[in-house]
Amino acid sequence: MSKLIINGGNKLYGEITAESAKNGLLPLLSACILYEGKVTFINCPKIKDILVMLEIIKYLGGKYVFNNENLTVDCSTLHSYELPCELTKKIRASIFTIGAIIARFRKAYFCMPGGCSIGDRPIDIHLDVFKKLGVEVCGDTIVYCRADRLNGAEITLKYKSVGATINALLASITADGKTIIRNVAKEPEITSLITLLKKFGAKINGEGTSTLVVNGVKRLKKENVTFYPISDRIEVGTYVLALLSTGGEIQINNVNFIHNLSLFKKIQNNTCKMVYEDDKIYIKSSGEGSGLGVVKTAPYPFFPTDLQPQISSYATTLKGETTIIETVFENRLKHFDGLKVMGANVLVKGNTAKIKGVNRLTGANVCAYDLRGGASMVIAGLKCDGETVVSNAEVIDRGYYNLEEKLLKLGAKIKRTEL
Ligand code: UD1
Image (cartoon, helix red, strand yellow):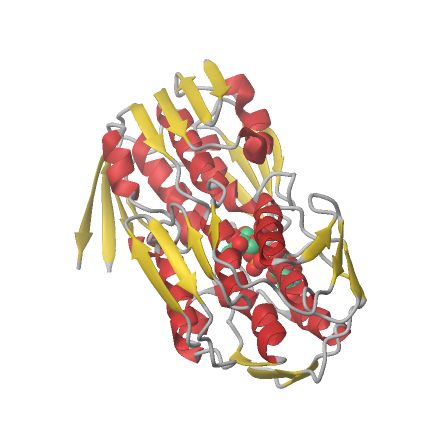
């Protein structure tokens, strides 16, 4: 078990570069399953969730190789449609592979990816999509999918689920005829996936809108593809919120400003200076500011649930009140337990947290219950008085590459111990 030990109080100064998006790469890697050419991803961070996804691909018979930061995946030799249970349970995103496996083999066999600390995370919408496309689905803890043929269909997702949108796309691109998918997720990671699928030869229209139209193709191309994944907007948001919490001046490279617009709008009154040029953002902050009003999470382009724990941490020391409303996951306010131990004034009721800003937080022993909740503990540790020990820190490694190195480079006092 890893612990992060942080001595808070240092302002952050310097320059860092954001990684390619973890949540962008996981669907891109899933898409490789249905492609027989080699795909090279430029700049792929070796973070845990991505490494698990690559192990899944290897288990299924595919190959991958890292050449420094670039990753090449070759699924021409893929032979299995059975997902390994142990790996499937390690990452929720293992479910993203099923649409591609069905498209390739017309069958798939997998165990449920399981719930996690932020909620139950059912897969009913994914399974409904498969059924609409003509797939027979049996079982509950172990699921077997089979289709003689995939038929284009009209599908309306009951929620803008990111994963179900991914599976609907992957399963329909080689289906017979046209598939219309309504109420889809519009996250930038979906648009990036569509760009890759088009390079594979898929015929998809409507990216960036709520309705996608897929005209099934008989065969995809087989030529080699090079692809540039989008930048990690959640990682960018995490460092921006860390900077606002401590004060200082930082530049982050490899940023797409539009992808983080909902965050930048929320914080603009609390920044001394914010400049965006090319793909770089420069931010200066005194570390002080006013309460944020209401921060309500919702599917893109609204405020991302994956930045809610981090902005909650930031809000604990702002003058005035902030109300956090979590609408995407039913149990994603657990980080407030740790923030309260550190002295935050918060009232949590249902999916809402009312924060009254305090002057300072105090270092304490806290736990990273989940990936983004862990990032929120780190932000609190960076700005508080004294020492903070964040246990279960390996969960943070699922989504942040070189976290300590980047924070040390910005002047934070942070180190890791392994038990
Ligand atoms: C993806 C992201 C995750 C992010 C989430 C919402 C990746 C690897 N993960 O997860 O970081 O927090 O989008 O932006 O990209 N739901 C159902 N039934 C389903 C599917 C989803 O009820 O079949 C519910 C979920 O329980 C949740 C909500 O819909 O409450 C959103 O989930 P979804 O958008 O599917 O999230 P993921 O794709 O799993």
